[in-house]
Image: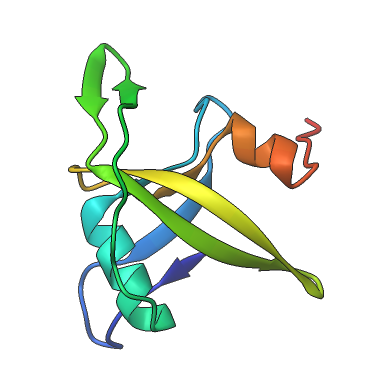
Length: 104
């Protein structure tokens, strides 16, 4: 799932199903744009979570609440925001919430 804030904008904002990620996480820049595009105020709540990216551990900037539509219903998703340029990563916990599985 990818979107641009403006049609001619160079930066592409995406949501990625990351089966190696243990948690849902959003890069701060993508989270801010997502909120602008969806008309939601960007406001984080405190989080003591740290997210591991390979060997690097990044403390969360905070958490935001997202409403994600799946078919005819909406799911409330709490996601940590990290001060990195990473897409919206739907990790293993999202797969559990959405009852998804990957078959290869």
